[in-house]
Image 1: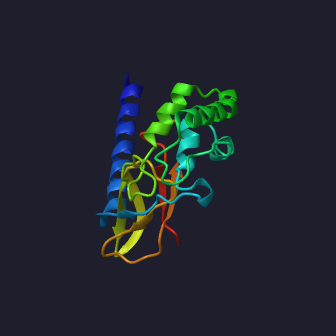
Image 2: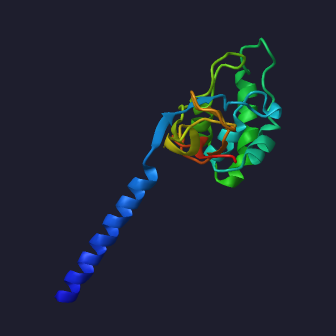
Length: 192
């Protein structure tokens, strides 16, 4: 019993020391909300489609989806979309290429509809802005904390910190099947 009491007291002392060390390390650090801009560019080969999001949402790479889509024949400009026959032919091409990867017609429709937007408009596919703070100490950025990773980014957005000068950080994105996190900001790193 005495040994357990000594061990418990030691654990409490170590925990208290760790908390004090963390507090001392964070003393003088100010959190400044960052501004995200951009991050929605597309590969010119994709004619405005967010293929970098569509592929991972389907569970394949962007390259596999791009290859599958290369056989699709979209309606020309000003036609108001493909005819029913053209749409069925395009769907057949896609399913022939993607079905072997376990993609169902329903999932293809779900993903296509989620990332659909009016071509040529200034609108974007569905997306959620990221939120983050710069950790500033003595006027310099010492790190970043991501509050919400957002979703729908196709390229790393530009990060600026109002009132603080410094090099642009490195921004990394994560892609996957979940719409809520596909194309999310996964890391922001100080560049030295």
